[in-house]
Image (cartoon, rainbow, N blue to C red; front, side):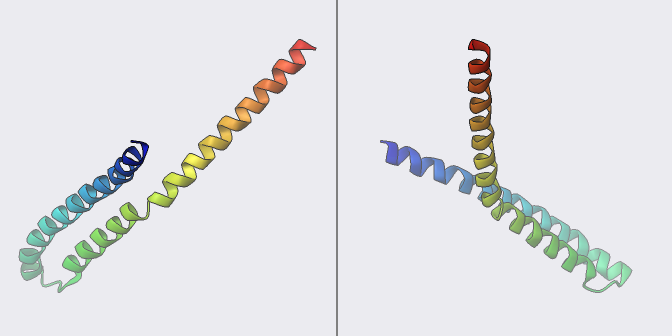
Amino acid sequence: MSKQLQEDSEKLPKTGRVAATSVIWGVSAGMLAICIPLVIVTKTGAILPLTAIIGAAVATFAVWSGENQNSQIKQLEERVALLETIVTTEDLEKISK
């Protein structure tokens, strides 16, 4: 049972990342649809569409590379909780003496 819970908890962040990635690329597809007529009117070349694609790629990278940051945050929270426990036990020992 615990193995199934662990597998489910591992799938949760991935589904969130997949959803975020689909939203990012959906919005960028809309931006590309808007950019095509603007490129023709303003004659700016491929600058606007490339900017939309690069922005979506950077956002996608940020979403998928965020896993390492989450584990680091959890480690820091555990360290803080341990330090709080140590400090409170030391304070209790000082009071009881």
